[in-house]
Structure formats: C-alpha cells, structure tokens
Length: 412
Ligand SMILES: [Zn+2]
Ligand SMILES: [Zn+2]
Image 1 (tube, rainbow, N blue to C red):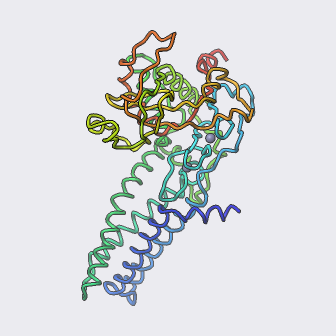
Image 2 (cartoon, protein in one colour):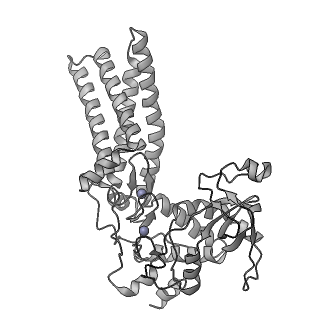
Image 3 (cartoon, rainbow, N blue to C red):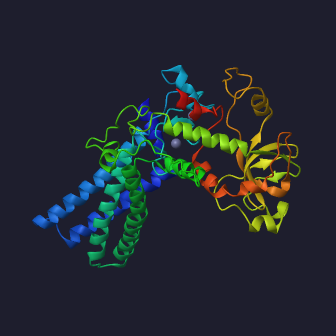
C-alpha cells in the first residue's frame, strides 16, 4: 500500500517536470560525450562512468525523498506525560498535539515531523525522514549538471538539430546549476544551523519580540556546526531519532521552542480584530471591475490566497495593508467554538473545528466591529506586519493554546 501511495506521488506536474529535465540532460550529455571524449580511452570511460553515477544518484535520491516523505506525526498524538500538553499546540485537523518541531502541512493535510517545507518538485513534504535524501538529491543534481554543462559546451556540432538540442540541454543544465544550487546553499545553511525554514521565522519573530529588552531567546537545537550536521546527514541517509524527541542545548528543554510559538500565537490573537463584510469580495487577485483601480494598484505582494466573502460574513483579521486585509472567515460553528471553549478539545462531531478559509480581501469590503474590551486602535498594529506576514505563510496552525506556558515552566 505504501509503495502505491508513493507511485501515485509521481503523477503530478512537479515530479514529471523534474524527472523529464534529468532525463533530457542525461541523454543529451551521454550522446555528446561519446563524440567529444569517446569511452574507448580510459579518460573517456571514467568521464562517462562518473556522469552516469551522478545521474543515477540524483534519480535515486529524488525518488527516495519522494517516496519516504518527511514522516507524519500519528493522528491524535499526545505526549507521554499528560501534563506536557500545556506546552504544545493542538492541531484541530489531526485532532492531536503537535510534537516539538512538527507543523501542519496544508497540502499533505497532516502534521509533519520537523517540517521544512512542502516541495512541489517531489510532491511531498521535506522534513525529518527525508531531509538527508533531499539534500543529497540537490547536491548530486548540481554536481552532475556542472559536468553536463562542461561536456555540452565542449562538443563540436555537425548538424543544426544537434546544435539546437545541445543548446536546449545546456540551458536546462545551467538552469539546474543556478536554481538548484541556490536551494542547496539554503539547505546546507539550514543543516549547519539545525534550523528549518519555518524555525527561521519563529526565531526571527522571537528576537523581534525581545527587541529593546535584555532578554535573549536561546534557540534550543543549535548544538554546534558539527553536531548539527550529524542531526541530519549520515552515510545511509537514515533519519536520526524518532522525529519527536530532539537533542537540545543544556540551557533549554524539549519545549523551549513550542512555548515561544505559543507566546507568539497569543500575541497574534491579541492583535486580531473582527471585521464584518459590507460588500461582497470576489476572491480575485485583480478585482478591477468590483473594486476599482486603487485596490488593484496596491495588492499585497504575496501569492497567498484571496478569499471570497459575502455580505454579513465576519472575518478575524490579523494583517493590515492600506487597501487590503488578511484574515480568516468565521463560520457559525467556529464562532460557537471560540465563544464556548478555547482550552479543551471538542470531540463532538456536530462541531468539527476544521480549517477555515483564510486569505486577503479588499479593505473597502469590510468594517471593523469594535469589541467591548477593545481599548486600542488598529493603526498601531501595522508595524510588524512584514515579519508576521512572512511567518504566517509557514505557520499554519491553530488555536487552543495556553498563554501562560512560559510562566508555568518557570515555576515547575
Ligand atoms: Zn495537523
Ligand atoms: Zn506537505
């Protein structure tokens, strides 16, 4: 069953394009290398053997990264000690707690262990179990493409078609060197710091929150470059540990980062404002006819979704632009849940707290509902939208947090 699921992953534009590029560059390079440096000499044979090895290792690691996946956290997961649940966030989709370094992936619709990002090229998440395969794939693809570029550049052409095909393959190979090379650079940097892309944002926000204070946030998984590398890479590419419990610095514990996340979420909730929709929003990226030029000329520069809204809907807004707002549409059931209960989990099927649509919509479609305990204006919250904006793209989680987590830990 597992292999079937894996094979199905290949039928998607990402893996199809990626494998086609590998195949195209490989075949053209082999054909050209026969002409340039025939394998009847030792050098020619070694050249060909090395290229075939790099090409095979690229495909092997690509397939392993795709089939292995990052590793999903089991549904309904909770820590062994029930008391530790207060240091963790709850995922309402997986109906379980999020282990340290786990995040919910919207594409996979599961909580993923040490999630780095969802990669469309492998049509799977990159994280705990396939991080080493993914990095090896990038490395072999770059080295193989450098060799391919040299061979394709050095070849003499006898016909127009050979020239066209060669230039095409050369373009692909150089494109791989540049684009995949950049990705490889970021992955190597992430491994040396033992920090995923998502954790970069959490850390950035942690430092931002403490600006101007003497307090300093210590990132718990930075064990020194050498140890950091061994946390991901090994000769056999087998993942280290169980993806739930992690080696941490002496001055930190298993929940240092999760508590920081909870505190950040609480801050975000504190600046959330409820808006009522007074004009329908189409959900279009360029709503020229419905909203006019002003709105279209100042779009939020992100590919995050735009949401469709009807008159009377309410939206919980967390980010502000001059002409656009970002928020989550409330459904009647979510209103009920928010009002009734924010700490315990509702197992009842009648109100299943599934993910609600969130995205950008034109500001002129909504008016703010002033809440009774609201003694602050909204304008002051524009300051940190850049950071929270980028951070939110990765942080796709929910709810049911415990604000006083850090205090409790201190007294523990
Ligand atoms: Zn989840
Ligand atoms: Zn995913």
